[in-house]
Length: 250
Image (cartoon, rainbow, N blue to C red; front, side, top):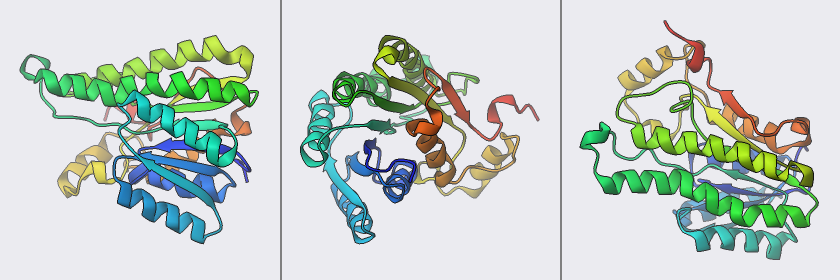
């Protein structure tokens, strides 16, 4: 029960890594506050968790909306009495194209969902954690823009790299308050975002030293580590959980 009685916000929780984290954290004793755009999917996950005697609640919305970030924190405080951590996991790759050919709206959307959302999350989550005497925040970043530049992903790389820079500053600013802040950098993961193209999956598997893609549970486990007391001396890190993608050259 690594997260026993801890209240954790999870965004991007309607599918993939976020949904898997919701089930994992709840089974580890956490009260989970689930956020995503798809209300029906969130309600289904909440129902499954509560049927298994877990504690879960959801609120649908857009992480690029500052008011939504506030509302998630207020819901955690109202329903469970406070906030102990957050897995800010929502993101989008956007349309892939070279920067000279990229539509400006696509750039702003990708940066807003991946980076601006992190600012809004921190703005409201950190004061809530301060009330509890500390806590942990995890942002889902990426090896893209950190250890490799993938053609067509300039907006995504810029936003995810920006999250790492923000993570470092937040960790330095709030470490004395017992607030830890880390970025998690997954490799290729078998989620709906990865699509169903078997040939594409084969190429992606080959990019990793382990020659496979991650299961969502493997990334959720890494997030749980960073949120738990097992990582009590880990802050300001960009933790790779990428199957050796970053070091693989063949």
